[in-house]
Image (cartoon, rainbow, N blue to C red; front, side):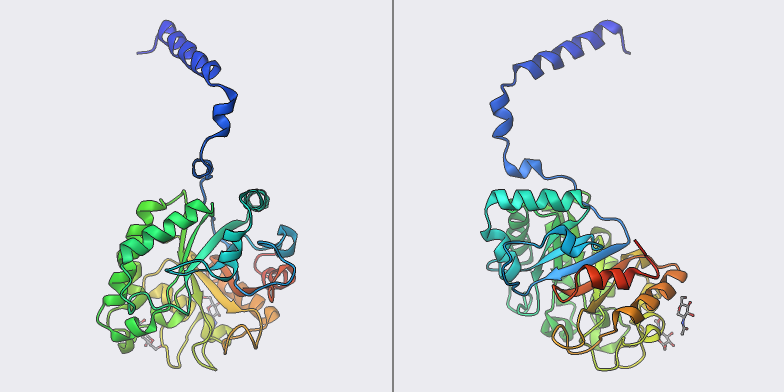
Length: 325
Ligand SMILES: *[C@@H]1O[C@H](CO)[C@@H](O)[C@H](O)[C@H]1NC(C)=O
Ligand SMILES: *[C@@H]1O[C@H](CO)[C@@H](O)[C@H](O)[C@H]1NC(C)=O
């Protein structure tokens, strides 16, 4: 099929195109076209950033969060950006571009979290497809690596009629059509009980979501906190047998229900008071839990709520046994 002469023609055409493009045209390529493909293999070490940090203009220096490889600005609401997401929007395009490239060089994905505990999108009647389109456009305009779906519509999920599960599936499908897998990261941040086998969630909760659109979700930042004073507070209840109010929702029990083990990132609060009502495990004990989980074949990673209460020192301790740097 190939002959030297046809190769020569192709080469000469390419060459003439290359020399014909004026240098100035390269500079007017729209910002969105410069988006580098984004993904983050396990283990993921994830920090959320929501609270205001004195003296800060945009995300922290990469040295401050050494040991993390995903940093999630919070929150992109259905109507507008708030808190650290708003700060990202308000700094200049040049500042964003400089910070983004520093993070990329350090191997840290920079994402935004959508919704959060102040919003109930299904109950409020938000349209899944148009909400996804708006959020995807924001992610592209402000050049982030992806979206974390921090859906906390307990009212809709507690109805048990499948409406929350359907909304999440519709939203996930719609956002993936705008933010394709491999080009953008898409995560969800369910509370751990939404994976429990429990009559409280007759619609199937996140086990149903995982069955319908799990292939489109890169991983879950599972919130193992705020679910009761004795829930997920020991390695045993966190990893092996949750018991209590939310049976079958420890790490390995969720996996036994069919969720891929390498998608189950363990989420914990940074502080015993202030970052969550309960569910705290101190960093040294947590490091031991991770070593136990790793011996059982898990390597998904850890998520923490929230920076700056957890920064480089926190993750260094938490990684020290299972994932030393
Ligand atoms: C749920 O947990 C109970 C008690 O630990 C166990 O007997 C049961 O088999 C579990 N069910 C599922 C579906 O994993
Ligand atoms: C929990 O599971 C891990 C991994 O399979 C195992 O090594 C550990 O012994 C278990 N712990 C308990 C208390 O059963």
